[in-house]
Image 1: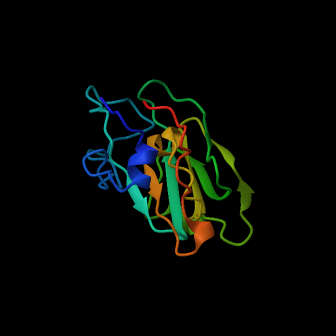
Image 2: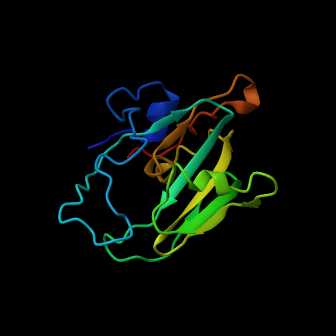
Image 3: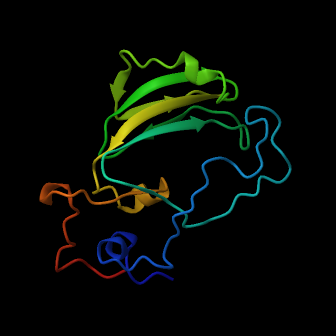
Length: 163
């Protein structure tokens, strides 16, 4: 059981063994995400994250699945605005769908719905290192500090309660 929050371990440089920076960029076993779900979905808990350098441009494609039933899921990216560059129904095709992305005048949001039985692609700039709260780590990324003082994570307050 953790005795220090993930945010504190990151700030104090004590994150060794708390999380690992090896979040997968694609599923271990791809399947037809909008079709009949497989018998074994291999779902597991973990503490794998993506470590992002400050000001990294990030593209994230979120795919709805039919594992528990296809439904529209909403995503709010706390601390960031992002651009919705594409969306569609069915399985995202990384070879065909990016050609249809709107890179000229995409809509800017902080919340988007992943269509039922579909996908949505967003792009954002990782310039907010304050998203290390529990929700941010559940989203599986950590934004590293930038070079300037206003680009660094503030220390936790002295009276922060222990876990």
